[in-house]
Amino acid sequence: MSSDLVVDLMSETLFLIIKVSAPMLLVSLVVGLIVSILQTVTSIQEQTLTFVPKLLSIFLVLVIAGNWILTNIVEYMQYLFENFNTFIR
Image (cartoon, rainbow, N blue to C red; front, side):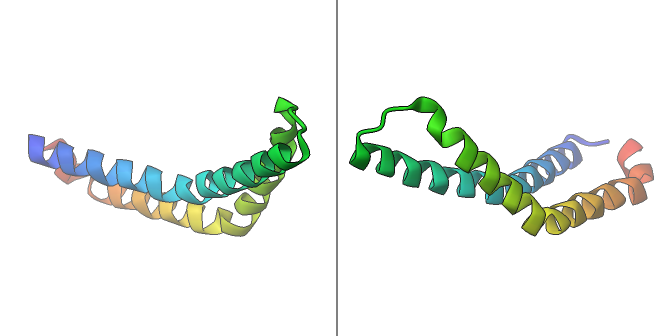
């Protein structure tokens, strides 16, 4: 296996990781920002207050986008398994 092929596989893998984790990270970021703005406005300084809304929002994103995430991961794994002979040469 050439070093170019290894670099290509690693870059595709990292891009897939970023692509499938982006929805959860972005929703968590937005919910955290909204909760922190509400905490600032109401002068509530409880650190654990952001935990439950973030947890619920990430769960909701997994319910909505879970099929898409799983499909992308399965397609990439099928690509890896189908081309396994090429990779080990």
